[in-house]
Length: 355
Ligand code: KG4
Ligand code: ZN
Image (cartoon, rainbow, N blue to C red):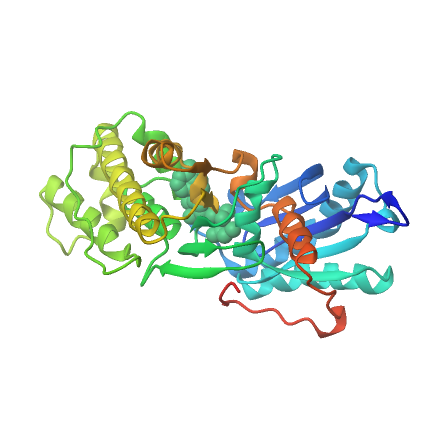
């Protein structure tokens, strides 16, 4: 950014609290991470096998001020030296979103800072810019998180066209539900990936759902795993899923995890290949969202597309929820002409489409 003839670096404080991570970060010019603080509630929710919204909101209240304070201190900044504040305002858990947005709005009002409400999925996509990379447009972004599974086509910054979506469960949700059937702790994704390392991915054949176009369906695979486990154990289909894990050996768990992971990754890669066939002009393919941390998915994406276009995956620390990606997304929106919002007028929304 040029300011009075000298290069001026724009520092944005990004705040994220849409689910079970309270996070804040200071980012310079959209890419340079000056600080990145994440307080995860995973241990609290693991006890219940999933995120409890009421507990999540209360935990955000405890964490939000110390997290913002630490993000500023780690960056060597104060709120006065920050140029703008960005915060996730949609989609997410209402109580969780309320805490982060209220903190951000208060800071913006008290310190008279430009204010940028940011879409969570946009932020996940922009995690790919945080390591100094500049993916070329047009690009395809696979948004694969606990709440979403979408293929998004971008012709330029701040242009988002959803060309494929899940019709039921999100891919991360499916990892979490299958993990539950197998008796693995929350969050399911990383735990499935871990035990899958010892499993045979070809042991169980799971069906690939037949869905037209670029859309997805993941709820059938979860049921297919449930039936396959009941069948393997010789138990009736009326056996509740929470009673299965005690009958499974470690090897069976590993084989089911590996077979499921392979199927889920195949489904995604297949649709991405189709998306690229429909958009042969795409120069880059990106992964975004928590499931982008999956090693098999990363490897298979490279195998599928390295010869055709540039492949980008976020650094592991930026795959799951964080404040750095929020600040980066806001920076590129500002570059594309977005104006500061009124912090008094902000609305949060549990569901919304990226645009
Ligand atoms: O993006 P994220 O942190 O939160 C949402 O916006 O939803 O994604 C969380 C999701 C969870 O479903 C979690 O199980 C999944 O990402 N996940 C993974 C891995 N790490 C996190 N799924 C598969 N493999 C992983 N290594
Ligand atoms: Zn997320």
